[in-house]
Amino acid sequence: MTWFTLAPPAVMLALGTLLGRAPLPLHPSWTARLLATTCAMTVVTALGTGVFMSINYAATLAPAAAALVPEWTLFGDDRPVPHPVGVPAALLTAAGALVAGRTAARWAAELRTARIQVREPLETDVPIAVAVPGRHGGVLLSRGMLRGFTAGELHVVLQHETSHLRHRHHRYTASGAMAGALLPPLRPLSERLRLAVERWADEDAAEAVGDRAFVARTIAKAALAHPPAAGPPAAFAESGVVRRVEALLDSAPDRNTVTGPLLFMGNGFVTSSLTGATLHLDHAAAAFLLYLLSLR
Image (cartoon, rainbow, N blue to C red):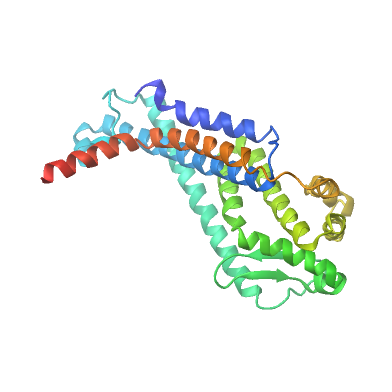
């Protein structure tokens, strides 16, 4: 192996760290797409690097067993993986796979519970509105939301939550949560992604309702009605609501019909290229082509 083996995950981690701290001058929809792509590709790159390093370390320990794995999974220079590199790589890869599995299992359990609860309002005075994705999903509301909000405010809430469902925002937040769970330096990126997704739904609700100030007041009312341990003002300040309300009280953001797609495609090209290099996709494609030629 060479230093290039670790270059793609290092670049991806640096890119994710930068995007987690530098605000993007884009519409929330494009920001969410770009950040979600970065999160997903970084996770695949990190785990892929660990898997391939572990395979090559195993081949170093047992050269005879290398014949049991495809040639494209082995490093091209045939250099052995040293113990100080191979042992941490194997341990971190196993730990990462465990974290990913537990995270996915927790999501599945929460989703099953939410799909059961969505059949009727939640019995709580706390105003709650949650978009439950899937065929048997919908918008889950609480009794407190139905009793404490006017018809116009409920319309705002439903427009916001249906935006989450329509655009499948759970996939965006899932990629961010997985990145934050596997790679702690990317937790700010995950938080920024969640904010972008909420801002996207806010803008959809504001466009549907036609009154940005009213949408802002509704969001603030829902945040202040939650009773956290530190009091309602803390909930208002710590949940990203301040930035969401400030954005809604400002003019609508530009749709970025040109810059948004260009930046998204540029980011996708860079991240997918790095991920492809990590997974040895070029070697896999060459091996597959040679296999097809051998059949002729």
